[in-house]
Image (cartoon, rainbow, N blue to C red):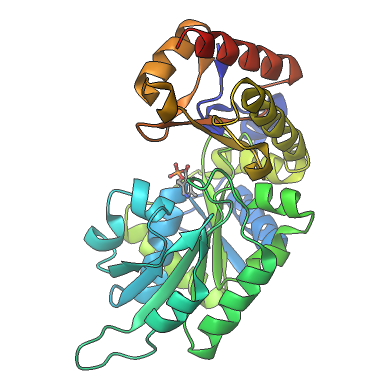
Length: 344
Ligand SMILES: Cc1ncc(COP(=O)(O)O)c(C=O)c1O
């Protein structure tokens, strides 16, 4: 099976397994775990932040960031297709106690004129104060699109003028950094906080790291405990994260090259399927609505021939490249796609 369903299917490398086996451990919820601390230090350095916090998942990183920034109150501005809105089960309202308003966006980039209009620095008689602005890069539902740095800089200036914080959901932050050819800190500097996952293209089995100022991370640590995310000998997991950051970042360029090749191969079959120019990183969105058969149908037909794709909507599929997909797998995937499209 050529599994392009997600980059989360990646298994830990031998080096990660070895590091997990030998990790120095402590009680992370009490006096601390040295390997967790090492990962947190490394993450803070890579993102140019003062401190960092190891958490169970990207969703937990986002939730804890909301809590630590807002203390449960106010309004969050973000885009309607963000991971927060699409896939985090409404935690923003039900757990973080926040109201949210969406801002129109293009490939994940918020419309800054609209944002300016909706930002409200203080509570008034009939208006909540904006507690936080959230952005996402790479942007999952925009097909792995990378937010342009000048856009992020402008957004940062706009929010800073009003004293409003920005959280970057950088689940695939290092994909964005590789695509832009800059250190991750060049992206992260446009946010007060940033979270990234080691469990996706970086191949660790578990975990995300939330980074920010020392005071922010102190609050985040308390809220992590509140949501049940305090861990014990978590160094076993963090050890794989250290290897992920030290060894797995540069190879993401291969995943990006292969995703582009998949989009090119598929667009030759039918240009309506995908536009290779829109592939910035390791995600390819494939439109199938015009073929007369829906995404579920397509997925079953592809799977029967040995290619796993993810459903994104009724009319679109998501293909994601990762460490277990090589050049031969890419060509085979394109061949399977061609054969299924001929039978539609
Ligand atoms: C942009 C983004 N944020 C957050 C997450 C959540 O990560 P997790 O699945 O580890 O909770 C994902 C997962 O795909 C994501 O793509």
